Structure formats: structure tokens, C-alpha cells
Image 1 (cartoon, rainbow, N blue to C red):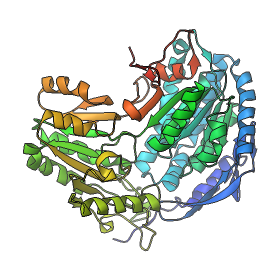
Image 2 (image 1 turned 45 degrees about the vertical axis):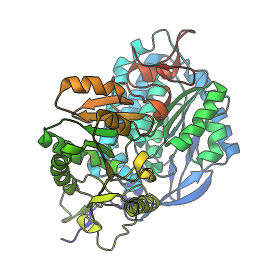
Image 3 (image 1 turned 90 degrees about the vertical axis):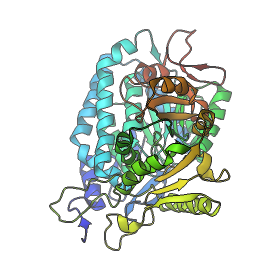
Image 4 (image 1 turned 90 degrees about the horizontal axis):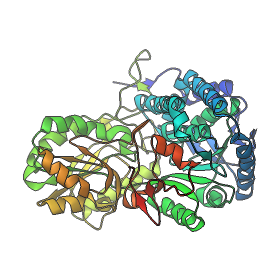
Length: 512
């Protein structure tokens, strides 16, 4: 079967639609930065390509540190005006921005496909979760703000590339709804055009948004430690997050830092294998490039044969490939579990880690090939990595203790409950975990000893939406927890004696 690109979905088709939808933000040869309430043709252009097939995309307009600080200072000026805008007007403007994003839902989704490689279904879900989530806050925000005031300065957002809409844009709009001006840095690895279009639609409604591009190291002094910034919201890896955490802790600055952890799925005295099989394939959504992905299975040794019988058919059914490739031009876009990884460098890094682990004794239980994927003839496949499953990665391998952020599963066998808990807690804190066991009493006894913010019984946990709270234990989270009213409280000031639920340098407080 020879595949072809679905007509009307090419990058140039999406680009032309951006030029029409938001000509103030997109010029024929570049994307602009948004600061001081104006779209500005500044910054040094960094060429970028799509992970999907190497197609050249709009280049990142990277600002220098001096210009970035000017942008932050201008955001503070916006903040001082916006914080006094009545809530009813803020709600009306945010609602109008959501209406505009709904109108451009398909274009926002198509941009996510090209820029970060999301399959069509998952790209649409990212957009929809952002819009629907903020609409929930529009309906619920009034009591959440009772007795509270906006922060002294704008909220600065530095987020990873994997969820530009449902994490970053969602957070920005709720922060603005709560009375704050908002700053966001475009993720260097992808999402520029999608974020620019979303911010253009919001800025038209008068929302005080700043969107700038640049390297984290160069802009850190402006976006993290500048005195104008009232709060830092970070989503990303532990190395960068650790540097941000150190900076904000020294300054005593409000912060929300979501960092990676090795989310584990434990199997202990379990027999419902058909149910487990239904969940395994779903864990490969977006190539496990998610903060709540499950790349580690910790399995009771005597159940290993049964586990494999449930696991292998599921992983062999995973579908990956070019998200826009169809057999016939009239076909719908394919139903894929994942497309490429975020870039070729990440795919190569994981390939090398897998080879190294096998060389040191890990046992490959499953290794897919590119021939299994739905790919265009002759396309660039350098960012694609088929699913891999390794048994017992050696302790010297990063795959033993760190999140791979790709379609690589590792399985660890254990003989005792103590070994199970040790293996599930290998990364000093995680965002989610799951324990599959037939006995509710066993779950009730072991789950509190798993260092994850959310632990599921026989089913996966997610970041959650709307009223569901979210945070992390150990090194997976620093600062205020979010979700529901906690997200609003994290970006507003309450009573002077208030202690926000979160993981702070001097205390850890779970929500009541």
C-alpha cells in the first residue's frame, strides 16, 4: 500500500491559513514575538524543521536577554492595569478568546501535527482540553477568587513542547482570568506557530499576553529571576527544573514547577489480564512523550509469564507513522498511537540508550521496526522510533532510573513487596503510579507507600482536568500544587498567613 499526504494538510497549506487568520502575528517570511501589546519583528531566526518528515517550518525568533527584560518590564505595566479590570470583563474577554480558538480548532490542531508530531486525534484532544478546561473555569471562577487578589507581578510560564494548548495556553488563560498579566516562552523544540496563533486570538480580545522566543539559559534572568515577575510556572525536565527551583527558592518567589519522574505500574497478586491488555496500548499514546506516561512495569516474578501473555499482544498492536499519510486522498486521517518523537536527536539518544542497556545485559522482549509504520515513500524517518521493551535494564543504565520520554518500556521483576515498592520509587518521586492487584486490602496497604501524587488501582491515572488536583512527590514537583481552585490560588494572594498546598523548600502540605 503506497501512502500519500492528505490533500490540504501540507505545511504550506497550514502556513497560508495562519497568514489569513492572524496577519498581525505571521509575516510571509517569519513569526513575530508579542510584547508591549504589539507584535514585533525582532529576534534572531533559528531555522527549524518538522519531526514528521523534515519539512522546514517557521523559524524561532530568538530574543536576546536585554530585549527579553524589556518585554518583562512592559508586561508588568500591563499587569498593573489588568489587575484592576473587573472580573466580569475579564470573563467576557477570555470567553471571546475561547470562541475564536474554537473557530480555528482544526488549524491549531494541524499546526500541532506538523510542529510536534502529534497524531490528528491527539492534536485535536490537546486543543479541546484547553478550550473546555478554561470554559469550566469561566463558570467556576467567582468563588475561587473570593477574598483573593492578583499577584504583585505577571506570571512567567516556561513549559515543555508536548502540550502547548492543554497545559500552556490553558494555564495562561486561567492566570489572566485570575487578574494577572501573562508571559510565556515558546518551547525551543516545537509549538511556535500554534502558540502564536492562540496568543494572537487572545490578544485581539485585549488579554495581557506576552509571547517571546529564546534559549532558556539566555532568558532565565528575565523570565525567572527578574523582580518584576510575580510567579514562575515551569513544566519540564529535572535538570532545567532544578536550576529554576534553586533560583526561585533563593528569591522567595511564588513558583509552580512540574518536573519529570519515572511513573511505574506495579503488578502484584493480579489475575485480570484482559483488563490490563486494554490499558497497555493506551500507555503508548504520543510515544509516551507525556509527563503521566508509564514507561516502567514492576512485575511479581511468579506472574511474569502471565504478564507477558497480556503485554506482548498489546505492544504489537501499537500503530505509528506519518500522522497525515493516507492511502486514498478521500480517506480520513489515520488513527495512530504516535508519530515521530520530537526530533531526530531524541530518537538517536534513545536508540543509543537501548543498545547500551542491551550490551550491559538487558533482555529485549520486543523491538519494532520502521517497516511496521505507516510512512510516506522516501520520507525522512530520522525522528521515528518503533516501540521497544527491555527486561531488567542494568542499574548503570539511565533507563533503569530515569524517564525515557519515548516509546521504550522497561520491566523489572521482584519477589517481595519491599522490592516492589523500592522499584516503583526508583526516581525519588513521581507524578502518577498504578498498582494492579486483585485484593483491595493489599492496594490500600501498599499505595500510600508509593511516592506518587496520584496512584491508580488497576487503571492508569492522568494529569486530570477541571476540579481534579495535580502535583508530585519528591523531585517531581516544586512549589504550589494546581488543578481546580488550587490553580487559581497558586497565582493569587490570599490571607497573609496562608500556606498553599505544595512541595516547598520549608514545608510539604497536601490538599485538605
